[in-house]
Image (cartoon, rainbow, N blue to C red; front, side):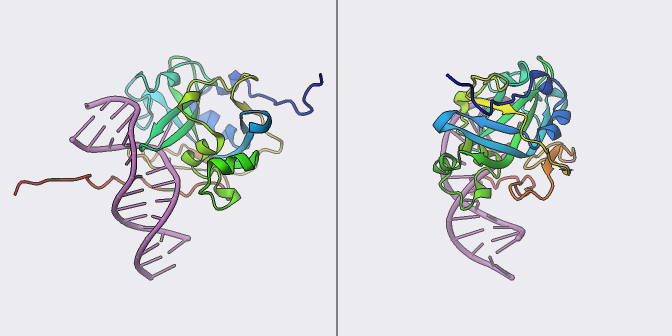
Length: 217
DNA sequence: AGCCGGATCATCT
DNA sequence: GATGATCCGGCTG
């Protein structure tokens, strides 16, 4: 009967049709929305990382297309979800041109709507700022799983949408090396909103101790 | 506040 | 068969 009073202002696909390291800082302050009505959860993005396909040894697209990374090679403005460490999901937004495999990992943010639902999905969170502080936590808070891999975030009827966010966008942005990777450690493609409490702590890659080693007697 | 180890499985070698 | 774009709890200080 009536239009919503605050229609979502979606980011246009052209926003994502640029190299990931250019899109990444522009995503800070934008709002990712999952679900709708009673099930809506919104997240103001505070931390991201860029990955640039076959040029970037740290990117999932580095060695070319596979079943897992196929969405990254598709058109921009889609959600690429992967499963890692046997227990976490991570959400990325596909950037660049079709045929490339650029993406921005959404690492952290502040929940700005639907906090009660986010908390039921993240019962371990001890405070507001921990609800989506880190990529695995963020995916949990938004209810993002591999079932949503390939979702078009530029379409109003999608289960996950990328919106412009409210002005003013963050005025101070920090940059540094990406977190938890073993290759291309020095590329400064992690971007975050300076001094925001929801930004995750930096962790260097730590090679894991051998699962088990049975040496000869 | 910071470091360490364990959990746990899809993906690729 | 090893590794990983991580998280959490327990310990140290």
